[in-house]
Length: 188
Image 1: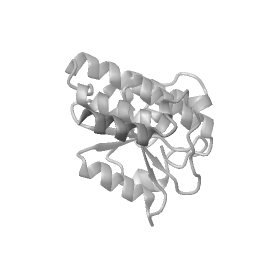
Image 2: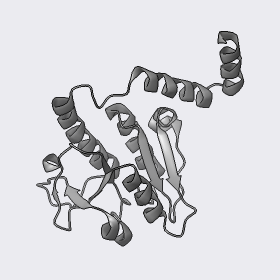
Image 3: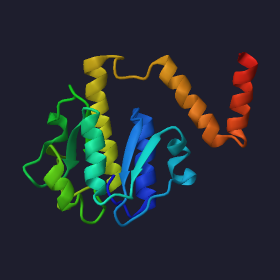
Image 4: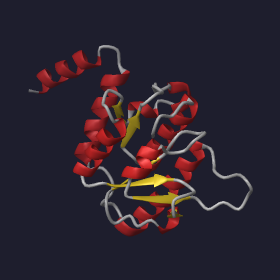
């Protein structure tokens, strides 16, 4: 998510990400700072790995460099720029979707640096859906394709699930780190 200024929309996106099995969410903060909120995300942010970019000369470049170094293709969501429909996006490789601000969409910097564009087909008169609705539609479309194509290979392993449960406990429990360290000592 790039520079989102409505926290309730961004938190709803986090809830959708968690529900569809997306683990890593990258948050580019150029002007607007984002804080997660349990009432809206229903605690989903505690299960996700949130990576924020706010301290670099180009937060977009820093985020995109990180994603490219991990083998991701970066696809911006926009009804413009020769976009293909989200249902036509192949899910053979690692893909990161970029969602822009509610008012202006993705920035010119994202447009210049991304690897491609997708759009959600619309038949009404408005140009776009709400941010959280757009994210949910895209995630539903791509996760359905993944489930059909890759069976369970896209899911977390039992070890990865356990690690996330530990991280959740550390974030959610008072003195969580101390409790975890005591457990580890007792288990040897």
